Structure formats: C-alpha cells, structure tokens
Amino acid sequence: MNYKNIAQSILDNVGGAENVKDATHCFTRLRIVVRDTEKTNKAAVEKLEGVLQVVEAGGQFQVVLGGKVNKVYDEFLPLVNVAGGEENPIAGDKGSIVNTVLQTISKIFTPVVPAIAAAGLIKGLLSAASRLGWVDASSSTYIILFAASNIIFYFMPIFLAYTTAKALRCSEIIAMTLGAFLCYPQIDALVQDVAKVSTIFGLPVIKTAFTIGESTRVFSYTESVIPIVLTVWVLSYLEKFLKKTIPDMLQIILVPGLSLIIMLPVMLTAVGPVGAYVGYGMQWVYNEVMGISPAFGGAVVGGLWGVFVIFGAHRALLPVGLNDVAVTSAIHKCGAGHNTLMCYAGAANFSQAGAALGVMLKTKSKELKQVAGASTISAFLVGITEPAIYGCNLRLKRPMICAIIAGALGGAIMGIGGASNHGFANNGILTIATYYCSDNTFGMFLAYLIGIAVAFFGAAILTYIVGFEDDKDDMLK
Image 1: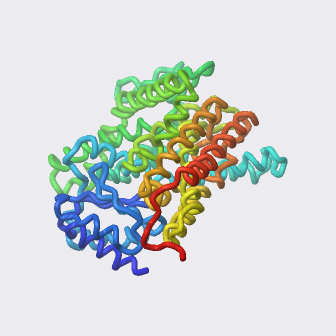
Image 2: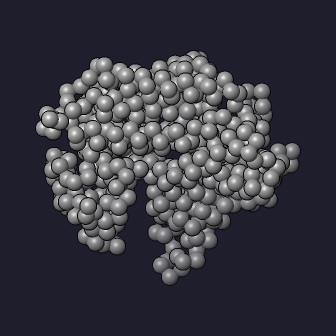
C-alpha cells in the first residue's frame, strides 16, 4: 500500500491544498477542515484503497482509515504545508463557534489519550498482580511501575499546557512553564496551605477546599485539567497583544518574559481558581445526574457513546472523565482517581465489537467478513471502535441499532452495580484489570464484567437474529 499516493489522492479529491484549512487526526480518522465543501468529492475518496468511509461532521471532512491513519497523515501534512508555505500555515475553521470549540477540545485532549491508556494498562496489571499476590505493593518494582502509571495524571497541567498551546497557536514552551509551575512542589505546598495567607504583587493567592461525598479535599493544581486550559487560553490572547505592541527586535526577550510575569498572578488569583471551580462544578453536575439513577446514566452513555463517535463529539466528553479522575484522586486509598464515564463507554465499545462479530458470522460476503472480523478484534482488544462503526455497523444500519440497544443494557448493569474505572483507560479486554483495584469490591468488578458480556454477546446475537441487507457484489459461492 502506497501511503503517499493515498494521501495525494485524498488531497486531490478535497479540492487541493488551497482548499484545506486544517488537518489533524485521531486514532482512526484523518480530519480535514476545508474552505469550500463544494470542491470535495466524497464518493471518490470512499473508493480509495484503505478508506473505510468518509464522514462529514463537526465542520470536518473525516476520512476513516483505521490503523493506517498515522502513516497517511504523515504523508498528507507535508503536501498541504508545501502549498501553503511556512508563513501561511493551515488554520482552523472559523465558520462555526460550536465546530471550533469541538475541534479545539479534540486537539487539546486527543494527543494525551495514548499515554493515559498506557497508564491505565499499567495500573490494571499492577492491581491484578497485587491482588493475586504476585507483587508486593511495598516492593521497589511496584513503586516504580505505579509512579510510571501516575506521571501522566500528576503532571497533567504540563501535558495539557503543551497540547492547548499547540491548538491555540501560542508558545508551547511558555505554556509548559506555566503548567510546570503549578506542579512545582513548593507552589503545590503553598496552594494547599489554606491556613496561611499568600500573595503575589499584593494580590491574594486563592486557595480552597471542596467536599466530595463525605471527604474534603484541599485543592491542588497537580492532576488538574481545567485551570491550565483556561490559563493557556488567556495566554494566547496576551501573547498576540504583546507581539503587536512590542518592537520585533525586543520580542524574543520581552514577549516570553512579560507573558510569565503577567500570567503568574493572573493564574493564581483569577484564572486558576475559576478553572478549579469549573472543574468541581462539572464533577458536581455529573455526580448529581448519575446520582438520580446510575442505571439510567449508564444506559445513556452505554447506548449513545457510539453515536457520539460518529460525530466526533465523544472527544468533547473527555474533559469530564479526566476531571473526574483529577478531583477524586485524594479520596481513594489506592492513590489514584476513578471515573465512571469511560466505564459506561466500555459497554458501547464491546457492543460495537459484538455487532461486528454478528456481521462476520452472518454475512456471506468475503470482503465484509474480513472487515467485520478485523473490526471485532480492534474493538474487543483495545476499544478502537471506528473500524467497526464505519466498516460495517453504521453502513448496514441494523447492526448499529443492535449495538445501541445492547450497549445501553450493559451500561445500565454497570450503573446498578457501581462499576468504576481505576484511573482512565480505553475499554478493551487488555485493560479489564483497571476495574478491579483496592477500592473496588468484587461485586463492582463483577458488574463491569456482566455489563460488557451483555453488551458484547447481546449485540452479536441481536445482529445475527435481526440480520441486515448483505453486500451483493461479493457473495461466497
């Protein structure tokens, strides 16, 4: 497979480099923002080798490529930059506020997901090994691996500072410096010392504590999500202002210097505290909604997560799950936060895998059987569902409906049983141990196991029984 030719063909059929405003990618999709949709040829792109489907959603022309997306993207981006020139880089879509917000959120949080998934896998393996007595929690091996699994969460402000700055096109290094400042031990201790009044340039450093259930937590910027995102957003405007007002010959020193001097008090006295309250507000709303009926909440997420994936809206929910982990880390004896959002999303992932399995068992088309089989493995093992959704379930319609029904039922079971995820991990059979740590009872873990089993086997059986309109062009003889 020639990835450069595929990239060139995609570019030719979206109107050329001059019609591309932005190009990013997630796990399976090449996301292109075009200037004029009339110049795109969706049908032609869908016929290209390696392309599973094309989806026009969220203001983007999304080419579903599965595991090949990285290689195609690496070939695609230089083609765009060559035409656009270094001084005229492709920029995001400004036509819709909603689309711009969704695209920006995706750019901020998607890059950190692989590291979070890796951390979740390590946490799960450690939890399982500790419970089975294979490793002592006080051993150096356990301590080192546990630290590795916590790095992405503890230093989250630094990672998000980089991705946010990149998404908003401001200085990544200055943004990361601000993120690292929030994680600096002396600053962390100062912020958590609520009994002592601290100031910067005479302005009060805002400190606070929040109550979650029966536990009270003094706020710490380490592991936080929203404060640094808001801080870098403000930094992006400050940096633009400074570059407009400071002479070019002085910008190399004064722009970064003034950015730090100005942003430190702004962050500690205004933006950071606002971000903290927003984060805990998000947590309160989520807890209240789920508290009304965990079964209903689990059913909604488990049933509709796959629909969110179709429109790329699931990325907008990542801050909710990450924020859940951040604000609950201090109330769990395992030393790490938990979340339920990704837990319920697991029902959706396994239901998509099950529906794809049903398609594989039912279809008489050789090509569709291969696509469905590969999609089942991808979704079942690591929770990458786009190949299943676009390769067969959504295209055949009925399997998608079966997946939604089975996913909702599986999510409801998880909600009733109180299942939760240790940290933050994508849902697949390889991360299953993240649902059974020292804070989760066996009953909670069993609820997750039953939920994913119902979602997977339920979707497979429903799809096989209900059936679908099979491909007519490639039937087995």
